[in-house]
Length: 146
Image (cartoon, rainbow, N blue to C red; front, side, top):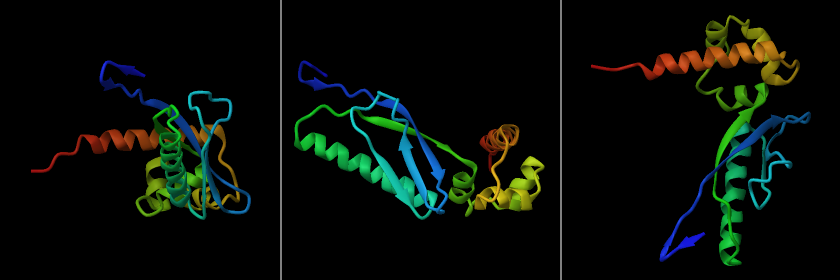
């Protein structure tokens, strides 16, 4: 959309889903029923991080393709929604299962079952983990150093 000589870009916020497949690989995709974007993209990888990187690379390639064809492109800011295995894989270098267990009250062995895909957590357990992590993030946002 252009007004005068200035181009205004509207950034859409779109949810992208990260899931661990049955084969142990990870995928990132946008819900096909979401019509916010005027293109489709997905990413794959052996880890959640690889899949996210592949997804963002596909986004940049699609952006370049649209520019080369002089076709409108919907800019997007992605909010990633993880399944439990993908979340634990992505943050394993920052959060140990023992630490997450201390935050949530869930046994680290049970968390390991979620991380490896042996078991899937119930909705109640997912909500408990999410709430605990948000509270921890709120606590961290209050930290100040002297």
